Length: 365
Image (tube, rainbow, N blue to C red; front, side):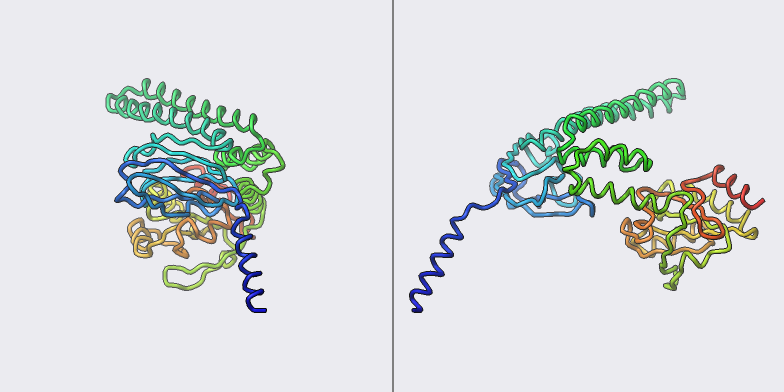
């Protein structure tokens, strides 16, 4: 009986091993100069860029395979560097040929989704080369004091950007059901106004509703609508510089500026002197500020507060871009400001400099 049972189990195992496996993303080819380097495949999804696998490369030969849950944007290159080539991966066979030192110029072939995005990436690469030349020319014109030339160069730069955006949207319109289209829409509209994001989603086929990039943009719209002007500001509690919890709701009764910033953010630091002047002028008239830092290093955060003489309340969870308040308010860039009335309703967003001062003066004078 035991022998029969053993035979039956063995037969089942053999049958299982003979069953065809599901399709997978296979990458084969050569990558010269990679033998002594750590080469990784990273995935860009709703959580940002995350390393998926480390590749074993022997004598320059790549033979890698993994199963992807959906077509996804990936980066292939040396670990902890920007030396990568970016493309769309799906569960089909891919080939690569090139060198690690010049991996951005490597030759890659892939499937249908890969080809949809490649038409965009090739155009972006071309525009990138043009824009670098324009930036150099702009700087040279500035050194020569030629403001007319600078204006011409800037106009050409803007035209390039608009041309690139139009090209990307043409690709989306021609391929509305491609997962690559959802990624492109997310890139083009992801930092725009709510109505622009909705316009982008409307260009996509309904079959993409479960795509990572479609869902990410849809969720961002929901978050932005929850913190739009006219909405009550969502409450949050976070520790201050001394580790004491501070709630947004504790500032009710005053006009409040919620200022998302970080010590490493150049534009934030350049804006800080204006915010200091604003606070000095209106702090005794029913106005306050709550600084929310996207720092990760407490020492750098505290030093910036001291150096810039920011004497109002400050909080942070030291999670960088993972800051819980920043996620709650759908913050995608800093400095980012949210102005609240005395009841905690959002009355303005992203005002800076004179525009911010004028608005606060209008409210309090």
